[in-house]
Structures are given as structure tokens and as C-alpha cells.
Amino acid sequence: MNEAEEHDLIDRFALATFLEGARLWEEGIASIEAIDLAMRAGAGLPMGPFMWADTIGLDAVLGKLETLSARYGQRFAAPVSLTERVLRGQLGKQSGRGYLTHRRSG
Amino acid sequence: MYIKKAAVVGAGTMGADIAYVIASAGVPVVLRDVDAAQLDRARQHVSDLWNTRVKRGKMTASQAADRLANMRFSQDPQDLADVSLAIEAVSERMEVKKSVFRELDRVLPPLALIASNTSALSISELAAVTGRAKRVVGMHFFYPAHMMKLVEVIAGEETARETIAAVMQFSEEIRKIPVKVKECPGFVVNRVLMAAMAEVLRFKEETGVDAADIDQAVTRGGLAPMGPLRLADALGLDVAWEVANTLSAAYGERFRPSQEFASLIAAGHYGIKSGQGFYSYR
Image (cartoon, rainbow over all chains, first blue to last red; front, side):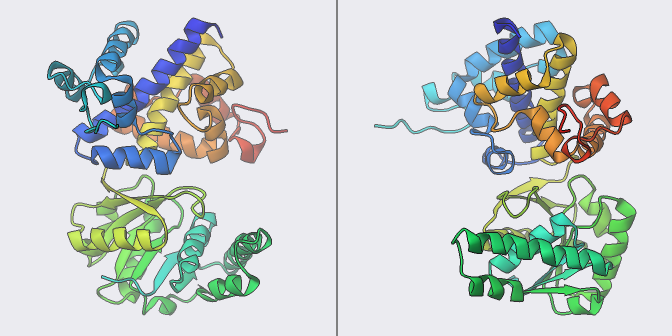
């Protein structure tokens, strides 16, 4: 596997995980905190999908989704909850708020 | 509502593990199965789990004996007449579960709760065969249940808030982490895992990269503790196949299993248990 392929694999895995989490929340199946906790305690993920997105930065997540949806189609379309937050400037940890609220340390 | 005695119905690995977890927390539990041989295997399984803890110095032999004494292995439905919560863990077939639910509804005290450990079937549909839909709930444990901390607590259409609260509290009491979820195919964890897995399989099909390279990239990237293909082999590809089909019927294309996955199933390659899956174990 070359470097470009590996990069593509990692992005597709991470974004498919995030997108399914976002759908679950938008459908009202579970809360953001519950979904993050479930993925850590039930699947051993080091970070839940929302904490992951807030850490990467929601603007960066949106950028990745634009690239992936152009290449692979609608299954990578950005969820409304993401585009709304980016428009409002809620970009995740860097801005103190994204899907979750982050207190600045120090 | 306080659960002072519980029951687990179905003494397969999952049922035995759940009963072990309950007994380990000091709560008396009846493990019920129609098959005596299955109950013997369950007794052996939980004894092995406790013996391992004794050998590792985590508890004394007498503590292990006390915990085993919390468990009662029974073929008799009348032994459930004084429990306040019964957890059904029989095979994942609607008709089998419904007949268990009907029986539980008859033998349990009127206020007792009935939980199903289903990973896919409708809680509301199961609740409908009982006269106590408000007191029916999903408690989805993860394999292996004696190690995995999560319990998805699933509300059906008629589940009462008090039922959810009681089951959330009980889950904590038996040292689990409960998460409240509404009813939908796959609930939270399987839905997210299978979405990522389907994407990885599409990548595999398009690029021809082999399973080990894919798994290594995912773990090296810090995305998951185990590669998705090794995880699928460990869970059983037959099980994953069933879930993938349920999810693609419910949500469409993005869950559709790949051609390679279909070929493995057709050839009887179910992962570790059959010696061959995405990897070979022979």
C-alpha cells in the first residue's frame, strides 16, 4: 500500500465512523456524550467520534468530507449538524466549542 | 426499583457471562436453561473464570466460592418466581425470544422487569407478547460480557422511564457502564462499527490491499485498538454478515457487504471459529 492509499484508508475509516455517529445523534437515537462513551466502552475506540471531530477541528473534518464526497459520492456528504457548526464558527477544541464544550486548560 | 435477585435465561456463553457478572457483584442470580448439558457447561465456564482470578491473586478461593454460591443453575421456570429482573439471552431468533418472553410474563412476579440482550431485534415487538410492555427493556451486553464494560440500555415504544432508570442503576451496580439508546437496527455500537467496516471492505475491494496491511494501518493510525478485519474474524463472520444485512436492509447502500465478504460466507469461512476468515488460522 502506498502512502496515498494509506491516507485514503485512514480518512475513509475515520469519517465513516464519524458520519454514522452524527446520523445517530441527528436521528435522536442517543446523546453526543452517550455515543462517545458507547464507542469507547463498547468498541475500545481511544476517542468517541464527536471528541475525535472536535480534536481534528470541524473545519478540517468538513474539508475532508468535501474531498471524499467528490471522489466517492453522497455517502460522504457532510451532515447538517457539522456545516451549521462550522458556519457559526464552532470548530471544536480550537474554538472552545464544537459538538462538545471544551474548557481551556491552564 | 431495587433489584435484589435477578435471572438470566439462556445459558450459552453470553448468558453465562452475564450471570457471572451479576453474581460477582453479590446479587443472587438464577441461570435458567431448558438444556441440562448447557447448564453444566455454563457452571464449568463461570468456575473457570473465578478460578483464573484466584490463580492471579485477585481473590481468595473462599471469595470465589461465595460468588458461585450466588448462582443457581435451574431448568425449572418456577425458580424465577421471586426475581425482580430477568435478562433473556437465548438465540437471536424472534420466535424463540417471543416464547421465552411469554413464559417469563407468566412466571415472574407482576412488577418484575424483563430485559432482552438482543443486538438487533425489536424490543417493542417482544414487549407486545407480554402484559407488561412498560416493564420491558433492552440490555445489550458486549462479547465477552465478563470483560466488556458497556451495556446499551434500549427503550421500546412503551418502556416506562422508571424501567430505564432501574436498569441503568442495576447496570452500574454490576460494574458496567450503561448508555441510554433508542430503538433502531444495530443500536449505537454495531451501527458505527459496521459502517466503518463496510467502508474498509470497499477500500479493500477497490485497491486489493491485503487484510494485514489494512489492519496495521488502522491501528497505527490510532483509530481503533484492533484492526476491523481481525475484529470481524474474532466476532465471527456469520454474525457480522447477519448484522451487515440487517443494517443494509434498514439504511441502504452504505452498509452493503462486499463481494469478498459474500464469497467467504458462501465458502463457510466464518473467521477464527472455522479456521479461515479474512485471515487463515490453520
